[in-house]
Length: 120
Image (cartoon, rainbow, N blue to C red; front, side):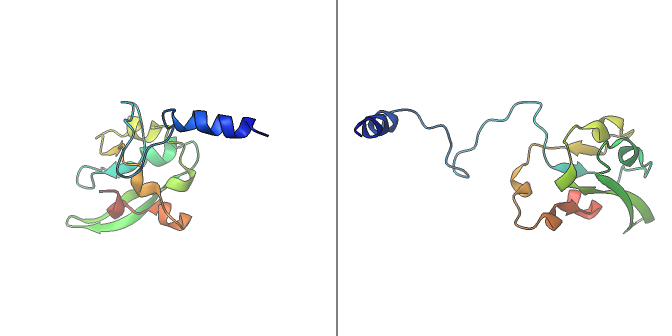
C-alpha cells in the first residue's frame, strides 16, 4: 500500500519526459519532414508529384494565377506518409517539406486538405 506513494515521491525529483508546448519546443532533427511549401511561380504543372505519391495524397487542381490558369498540386495531408518522394521528383524543386508541424494541429481533418494557394 505504501509502495505507490514511495514511487510517486521518487518521480517528483526526476526530469520530465515532456516539454511545455508552445513555450518550449523540442529540437527537431535535420531530416524531419512536416508541412508542405509550394512555390506557385516556379511550378511547371508537370504532375510528377501526383504520379509518384504512394498514397494518392496529391491531386492536381486548376487555379488562376497572374499568367492565366495553371494546374497545381492539392495535398491531402491527412493521408500523407511524409516520405518526400514528391519533393525529390519535382523538377524545379518548387515543392518542399518544412519543419512546421504546428499547422497540422486541427479539429476537423477536412482542414488538412490544402489547396495550392494555402501551401505558400
